[in-house]
Image 1 (spheres, rainbow, N blue to C red):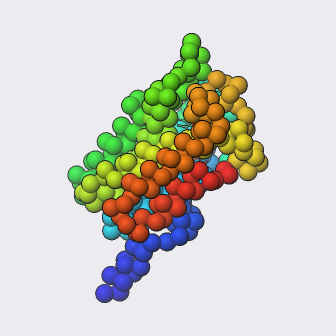
Image 2 (image 1 turned 90 degrees about the vertical axis):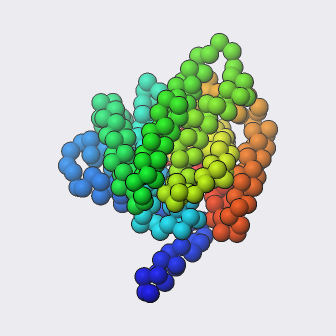
Image 3 (image 1 turned 180 degrees about the vertical axis):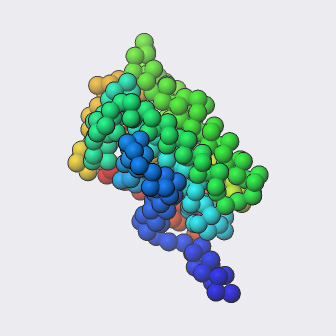
Length: 300
Ligand code: IPE
Ligand code: IPE
Ligand code: MG
Ligand code: MG
Ligand code: MG
């Protein structure tokens, strides 16, 4: 009985800022536990690369689980997995052969603090750790298998890596990318991991992931538009990374194609569509709606 009451309490909706910080803490705890106090430079760099982020992807995993009646403790390994995988993507994204950035989350990037070999290896090992963690998610074997293969798909050449490849190729493309190409690029490099995170709950529960998939498709594009706007209008100290780099690098973004104001308009429309996708969940999805609004209002 006591257990039932505490589970019920845990499944109550929380305000977005509280839910975000709790999910981020849960995810980091999983990664640290996964590393088990391991000594050595690569393990140190891995820990360094998963702290200090907003934890949005962890939040999406935990919140989607809550919406499907699943407690945070069961979904925590999936939240740890997606933050480890996201951390890996950032470590490699910052390397000289990609975006060549020296600052991330207000701190030196991994290759700047250590060296490029450590950055490659820490990124690789964070990806492996992500799969170790996701395999510990508290759900049926069938659901766990779907999470593992879904994460592999989202991370790989049809997902984040494929999008990153398009992003780099676009820098030297003979002609600018069109709207459909930029949508595909951004949906892959950013949307794929966000899409996986937001469908953790229905996949764990064996429920229909379609509404949350649609929410995440819109959210992922809006998230990257907001990132691209911050590159132009943000405050570097608040954002915690070097800004004003995308245009010089020749990045293909909604902002480079449409201009700043139409891109902002587009982001608002995407957030409206994301919120509309949550209708089936009623008011219980208000925290996810607040998250969507946060994505385009954020300053970092
Ligand atoms: C940055 O993601 C990379 C993009 C996909 C634009 P976040 O803005 O979520 O990074 P952290 O984890 O909060 O630092
Ligand atoms: C990165 O996009 C997306 C990833 C898959 C890592 P950006 O290159 O725009 O991200 P930031 O601005 O460096 O965080
Ligand atoms: Mg990049
Ligand atoms: Mg970058
Ligand atoms: Mg950026």
